[in-house]
Amino acid sequence: MGLPHMSVAVYCYLCERANKNGECFPSTQTIARDLSIGRRTVFRALNDLEKHGLLKRIRRRRPSGGYSSSLYRLEVISDV
Image (cartoon, rainbow, N blue to C red; front, side, top):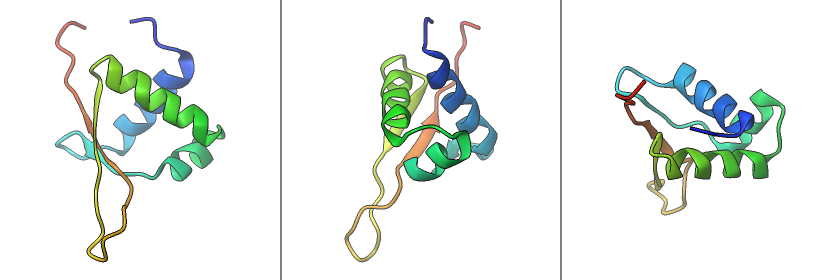
């Protein structure tokens, strides 16, 4: 697919954290801290993964009205 190695690392991280439905919701700050990379790198990686159809991002709201971390739904790859 030609993804940068940091995008692959973020994808693997999300796969490890995903539930049986392929969903997880770590914050970008948590991803960055756990992988020892910058938040901008995480954002670029998430954009790459979404562009290549490997990930769907769903914004979540708190009951108080503010935004929470996004829900990440990993897409199934059938061509592998």
